[in-house]
Amino acid sequence: MNNFGLQYNKDDLFDKTGFRKKARLFQSKYRAEILNVGYDEYGNRLTEEDGSKGLNFYNGFLIFEEVKKRYPKFNKGLYCDMLRSEHIPFNLFIPFKHDKSYCKNVFNDLLKNTIKSLDRLEIEYAPSPKEKYLDDNTSFDAYIEYTHINNTKGVLGIEVKYTEHEYKLKKGSKEEALIKNKKSPYYRTSEQSKLYKPEAYKLLPTDKFRQVWRNQLLGESILLEDKDEFSFFTSMTFFPSGNTHFIEVSKEYISFLTNNNNKFDPVTFELFISICKNHCPNINFRQWIDYLSSRYIINETI
Image: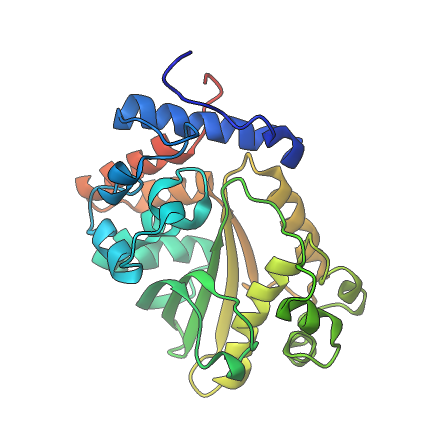
């Protein structure tokens, strides 16, 4: 056996496209050949010792310091699992804290040059108190506040996926209760936002679309509750092009919207990296971009 480590033999049951299987092997190979360290149980998992050193994160821009600040206690999934997406927002977005002008240029390519300045960037963020908004545990993987070119304020709420698809609704959960209650903040916010076509409500609560819907609603609730502060919201989902599930979901979700004037934007890792290259200000950021490419963009030779 090569030193890529044990692979999970049921990946094909969860992802018929084979992308999860490829991604697991790709991360296992990166650990073995680039990081040159051992593994814990499966090839894509760092040992606790190596995870505690920050090897799941880019070594630059104080990224691991930001991780420890946000999650000071050791979190095995975050620190050690190279396949799960929860670590990726730190690697994708923390460097922008060191050059907000660069961040502005990148996101202006995605948002039709509507951003005047970037004002705030947070990882794993939800507005509080939650009862004021959706009254649930929805949060953004990354959250950006910006000044619009018309001098009002806007928000970007970003969800990051790698191999993940939809998730099942947990029976007896608060989320299930909110889904079943047509007077809950989910439906009230949807109706007040006037964002969805009437026929969309049959599909939005389903497993396929529910998380995209909730992320959108969290941002729309900010616009409704904090209307004196914010005038614009865009929900963004970042995912690799090999995750064809989200390509399909995004296309269908957009068809539910009454308009999509910077309301929902699906962004592939490949597109994001390409835009980052186009606006790259210096060698430090170029090295980070090269890391993102080698770490997350799967080549077909593995």
